[in-house]
Amino acid sequence: MSAPKPSAITIEEAVARMVSLDYLPEGFTVQDITSAFLGVAEAEHENARTAQRETQAIRAHVCEARHALAQALFAAMECELDRGDDSMLVSSEDSAGIKRVTTESLSQWASDQFGISAPEWEPWNFNPVLEGIRWEDVKIKIGDKYKIGYSVKKGHYKWSTFKQIGLMGIHKIVPNQLGGILIGLSIFGKYPGVRSLRNGDPVAITKLRGSLKAWTGISGEPFSPFNKTDGWKPRFELIDGSSEAEERAMKKFSHVPWEDDRDSATEEGQDDDDTDS
Image 1: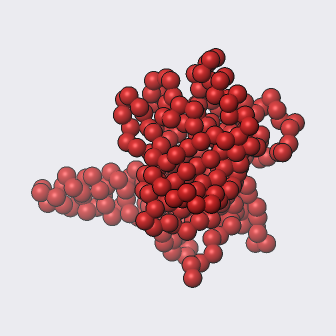
Image 2: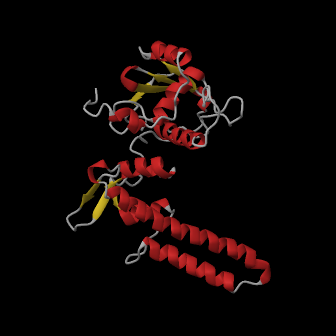
Image 3: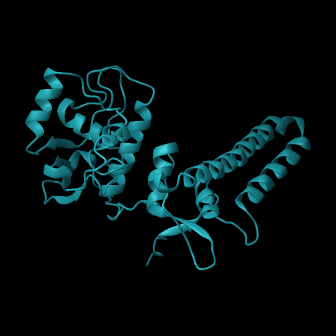
C-alpha cells in the first residue's frame, strides 16, 4: 500500500521537491545541501585532470544552477505568500508555529508559474495509471456547466469538472487558458487554431498535457508531435457536447479567431461578485 499524499508541506519540503532533492538530513536546509553539492563539484573541477576538466566544469555549472534555482524558488514563494488573500498559495501554521502550504495550491502555483509539477501533489490525480491504453482509444466530451468526461474504448464516461482537473480560472467562473485551449481544440482540431505559433504556446500545451494525463491516469502522449502546418493535434477524440457548443463555434468561426491565450484573471476580474454554479 502506498503512503498517503501529504495535504500540506513546509516551504523547505516544497523547494526540496521542486529542485529534485529527495533527502533532506535533519538540521540542514535545502540551500545547505545544494551549496554542499556545489562546493564538492567546484573542488573536484579544480583538481580534475585535463581530460576530465570539461566534464567536471559542466557538473559544477549544473550544481551552481540548481543552487541558484533553490534560492530563487524560496524568494518566489515568500513573495507569493506576502500577497496574503490574493496569493495562489494557501498557507497555515501548525501547533509549533511552522508555516505550511497545501499541496493542492502548491501544485497549481508551481505548474502555472514555472511548469514544475510533482504527481503526488496533484489534487485531481485520482486515477491509477492505465497500462496499455492508447490515447487513440480515448474520447473526451465537454458537457454543460463545464462538466468533462472521458471514455476508453467506447466504455462508460467517467465524469469530472473543469474545476476539479485544473481548467477553471482563479475565481472558478470561466475556464482558464488551459480550459480555453481544450474548447478551442474541440472547434479547430488543432492548437494554435487559426493563428501562427507564439512563444507561450509550447508552455500552454505542456500544462494541458500534464492536466489530461493526471486526470485520466493514461500514460503516453495525448498530442501528436508539433508541425508548422497543424501545430499540435489531439490523439484522442474530442467533442463539445454542451448546449453552448454550436453558439460558441459559430462565434469563433464568424467573428474573431479563438483567443486561447487570454489571461483568465483579466476575464474574471469583471465578474468578481459571481459565485460558482
